[in-house]
Structure formats: structure tokens, C-alpha cells
Image (cartoon, rainbow, N blue to C red; front, side, top):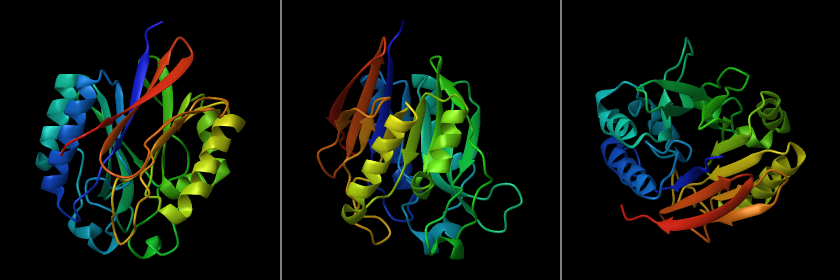
Length: 252
């Protein structure tokens, strides 16, 4: 059985600056490639920052020219990459907070945050209910975005699809970290699913992110966590059912 290496890109976004954030993303993808990563996940709204009043000025689509450097690196490195972005999706009246997945074959998919935090509805629309299941190297996964993880029904729906991994891009502050991380560990135990939490590495939208991105193995055992804030690549590797982790510093 070939090992699988998934990673959290604990990055720090520049508020409203898509071009600079794309460059930051490409540096993380390059670092992930050098580390042999198969699947790389960025935090919530990583391409824009958690800048709710500015989201309408930061809208992107997966095939936009500004995202070409990311798509090209995905093609070259053969890494599946999930980025956080605001976009218009379907017939929604407002932007959605989305996780856009770029696949090595040139295709992409969009998952939109279903559960909104108080205050977000003024700026964004919730996504449709239900979980998407994807595969990387014969391992299935489902995505979540921040407040989705505060609803056990969301994690349950992900596990019910048969997904082996629950991958959550978040913005979690120091004040909320203990409760949020404990809940994610509980999902790993309750649903016997691997859980990856990908947090921002620095301030965004007026919030002081806690960093400390982490991975829990199926059953709830903590495997690896970033010790604090800052730009870091957290890697969790599954080799024949055994999980281990490592953390790398990324210079952007």
C-alpha cells in the first residue's frame, strides 16, 4: 500500500490582495511538492483574507486568469490543492465562502460553506446542504469550512458518504481554539475519521488567529500540530494505516 501525505498550509493572507496571496499560495505548493505531499489544504478565505466587507471586491472563479499560477503548479506537481475564496456560485444573491479544489487533471470543484457565523449573512450566502466526496490516491475526503465544524450533523454527513478524511479550512482565534479543536478531535473519535484543521497563521479580518493547525487520526488520537502561529506546512502521512506527522516552516 502506497503512503498518503496530506498537508495543512497554515498561511497568513494579505487583506484583499489576491495577487500577493496567489504568490503566497504558490510558495506553499512548491514547499509541499518538495515534501512529497499529495493533497494540500489552505485556510478559510485564504485568497482574500477574512475581510467580509471587502469580499465583493475579491470575487474569483476557478478559471480566472489571476489563478493561473496555482492551476499550472497543480498540473506540474500533481498535487490536489484546496484554496479558500469568495465567489458567486449558482443563483445565490450574494457571494459564498468557498473551498475551491484544483485537481492535477485540470478540473476543479467548488464547495460552499453551509453554516454561517453570526454577522456573516450580511455579506455572504450559505451554500447548499450536503457533502461532496472526493478521492486522492484511493482515499476519500470531504471538506468543511469553519462554522460547518460546529454542527455535528455536518461531520456526520461527511462520514456517511464513506469519506475517510474530514478536511476543514478555518479561522479560529485563541479564545475559540480549545473548544473548536476539542470538537474536531471528538469527530475523529466518534466517526472514526481522520480530521485536518487548517488555520490562518496570522491576523485576518480583525481576528487574531491562533494558528496551531492540527491533525487527528481516526479514533481521535492527536498526530501532529503546529506549535503556534506563523507560516507553516503541517504534514500528516498515512503509511499502511499508521499515521505520523511533521511540521515545516515556509518562507513567503
